[in-house]
Amino acid sequence: MAYKTFVAGTEGLASDINTYLMNQTVMVFTNAAARNADLTSPTEGMTVYLTASDHYQIYNGTDWVTFDIAWNAYTPTFTNLTLGTGGTTSTYYARIGKTVIVQGYITFGTSPTVGAIRISLPVDVASSNRNLGNGQVYMRDSVAARGYIGFAQLAGSAPSYFTIQASRSDATYAYYTNQSATIPHTWTSNDYLSFTIIYQGV
Image (tube, rainbow, N blue to C red; front, side, top):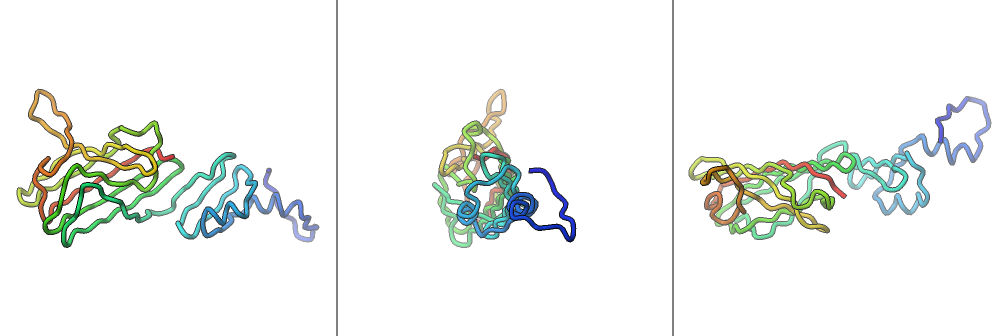
């Protein structure tokens, strides 16, 4: 539908309002369910704003594609990890189309329980990105005052998550190995890990 300039004093036809005018505005809905209830046959190029999630979305002719205007907080699910007393989590993400950017900072409290950590992601990973190392992880040992480098390996679907691979240098070439309760160090109070991940979402 082409763009139309409405001239003062001309007749406002229902067909113009339902096509030109409707497509030249950003429609506001609470969430995707409310959007779908009203826009049962969306037109390619339509733009909406969802107030519950602060998402802009554009209809590409097949799907509604999300474009974030700010970082969104999310609460990840941990597997094989208990932060301990006083532990904190700060995790955010932004989405531009199918590109998802995730940043997080996790501080361990007193007596944490750490195994082969899995951390859930806010948007499921596209099948083409699963089992890839798509992010950088920094692991801090507060006792030794030393930092270790690793990467995030993406996995799973509905929900998706990532595991942590720690860098090792005890061979001819540097390589990565699974993070654990003692790799790259024994985790204790005030240790932390941070991560930045970029991947293709579904």
